[in-house]
Every structure is written in C-alpha cells, then in structure tokens.
Image 1 (cartoon, rainbow, N blue to C red):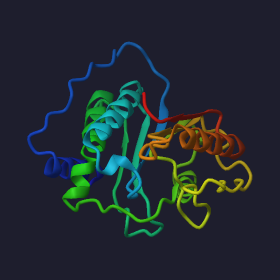
Image 2 (cartoon, one colour; image 1 turned 45 degrees about the vertical axis):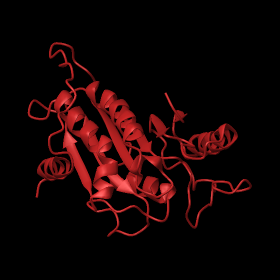
Image 3 (cartoon, rainbow, N blue to C red; image 1 turned 60 degrees about the vertical axis):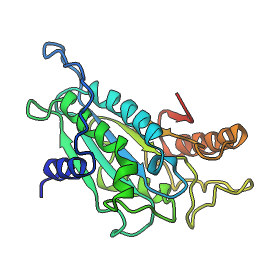
Image 4 (cartoon, rainbow, N blue to C red; image 1 turned 90 degrees about the vertical axis):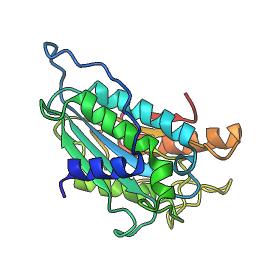
Length: 230
C-alpha cells in the first residue's frame, strides 16, 4: 500500500467522523525554497502524547503549522519510535510537497494523524512501548534521510526522556553520551515538543533541555528548541 493511502487508511479508521481543521492556501505566486522536515512520534509509555488527546491535538496543530509553510519540492517524513527493533515501528509516511500534495493538504493529514495518536494506541493500531530510543531514532534518521540538499528540521513529539542502553535520563545523575563526531552537521534545527511533559517538574524540564541543547550543538545541529508547552 502506498504511503499516502496507508496514512489515509490509518487516520480514517481511528478518526472516523473527525474533520480536518480548515487551513489557508499557500500563494502560488510566492516561491518558497524547498525544505525537509523529519517528524518523529515517540510512542513510549512515558510520553503523554500517547494518552492525552488535548496535548496530542496541540502537538498536531504545531507540527501542521510547520508543514503549511513549506514550499513545493519540500520533503515530509514521519516515523514512530520507542523500542529498538524494526517490528515495533513499521509506520512510515514520506511525501513531496507538490501540486498533487499541497502543503495545506499534507498539513491537515499530519495534524489528524498526530492528534489521533492516543486513539491509534487505544485501538491497538499503534503499540505503546517500554523503551525510549531517541538517539537510535536520530541515528537512523540521519543515515536514511540525512540533511544534505536542503534545509532540514527534525521535530520530535517526545518528552525527551531517553531510556535506552545509551542513557536513563529519568535519573537525576544521568547524562546523554557525547555524539560520535558531528553526524547532523548541516541540519538546521532539532525540536523536542513536550520536553519534560509528564514529569510535573520545572526543574527536571530545565535539566532535560540543557542535556539536549548540549547534545544537539555537539552533534552539529545549528539550533535546538525544547518546549514543554507553548
């Protein structure tokens, strides 16, 4: 099944009867340089995205606003992550913004998908996961998609609590390991949406933001944004 048909089938099954938010059209007369966005949806059990519909809707709306601003020939890639095995995260969505996949159409599809994450998990279409392999997901993303050829932003809908053999960031004394070189040299930005959500701790959120900001800079990202709320 093609990626667009697969996305339509998944969202239709989980969100039957729900309409996409009306979104404004892009002015065809204003050329916008193509960009790339890699969207990672964290399905680990610690992430409120998988069980809080209001928060998932908020994340979906913010990600949709990014896609809305993308010009023709831009790339959009969506993946899920959590456990480190291929069978846990088989969902993928890749498309090129074009006259047949306009930014407002793609944005509406992705907004519905992200907002529907709690329902997709409850229905069993997506499985909540016991680990949070954020670093492994980023490593796979840079090797499979990369940052070459156009400005690239990586957006993770995640609480930022790495829970893997690399680090257990849920512990106060834990730290992310230094990256091997600068694998994301050339990437425009790393964003974490929902950083520290679920911890109910401003102090913990600040600690997680500091960890990821240092790691992103060392890994080669030009900018890091970590948002608990907005």
